[in-house]
Length: 412
Ligand SMILES: NC(=O)c1ccc[n+]([C@@H]2O[C@H](COP(=O)([O-])OP(=O)(O)OC[C@H]3O[C@@H](n4cnc5c(N)ncnc54)[C@H](OP(=O)(O)O)[C@@H]3O)[C@@H](O)[C@H]2O)c1
Image (cartoon, rainbow, N blue to C red; front, side):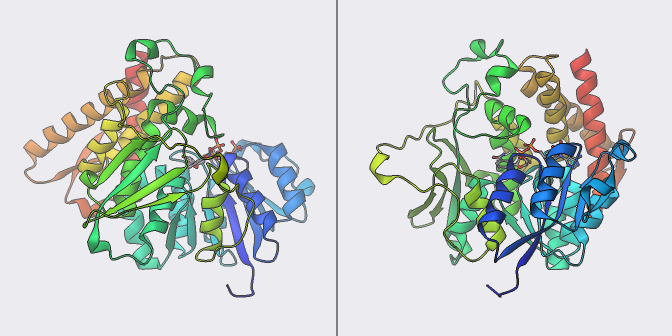
């Protein structure tokens, strides 16, 4: 690597991935330097991080904190507010690598700005690709941005595909821990609580992705993420439950050879791989203890009990705005479940219902408009000429529509 340090901006620095990323940065003081940190409203943690890592910029996207938080306490860092400042940081010329560690659809705008500005984009936020995968990849091609996956399964597949002939790839395998409810029946899932769902057996993560792991929606989103990132058909993606979470991904070549990536479940490794790519150095991530490694288990997922997985395949096949619709419905339902206002199984039910409404509106428009496709507007769906006319705006409009629809469905 060039002797120059890589200048990193971390969007979502106060979350689980953000904190792990800062541990990686701290382990490589000669190679990595934090120049920007951004969060939504966790002022105290952001302040601690600013004091320790001395970035040039700190951003709080929650606008109404302006006036309540004193910028002088963040000096010499410049404290900025609002989503526009987040976008500015992502595109800042003196930033080399932007880590997108924001949770949910909120991660898309920062990812978009970073890709548009041609950055190295370390993408932990899977939702950005679920919402707008083809658009982001097209944008990256134009701007010469490099998108490096941080999700452990996608990092594994990305590593396994290095220096391989893509035309020889038959399929990819994403592993899943199975979450806290592996082995439970549907009847048993009717009354599980948020507290139980938040008790993940392997990974320590933020609340939204932990609930997604419990419903298997996390794997559904990862199927869609992989579909776009690796340009494979949905049929080429296999999901296997692997409770030890040591094998993160496998690639199967057309002659039947299978290659796997193994490491303990520790996000610092895929984060480090993306931040230092393509170099490998000894870092803070745990290493495999071969003496303690006895057995690795793999099983097929129970798609009857965890119907979310099928939604992932469905949306990966269908493409278009269905990713934005599924993701938004899921975010609304997860928030509702975490607030104790709906049941665990209402999460996949809401997603199913909102997708069905979207499909129904889409096919109604199609039948009146020949081959035109249906796009979302702020108020509902409107026709537009062709798939290529999709834009960030239409994706964000689909996201808004699906949120309203999910809330309406949950309230009735
Ligand atoms: N955690 C993992 O092990 C893991 C593994 C693979 C992939 N991922 C993906 O990585 C992303 C982050 O996950 P996480 O577990 O780290 O989430 P998390 O712990 O909930 O942290 C979320 C971060 O995003 C920030 N944020 C939320 N909304 C924002 C907004 N509107 N504007 C700016 N910042 C905002 C939060 O700031 P505040 O603290 O101020 O609210 C926080 O820094 C997710 O997309 C997840 O799917 C996570």
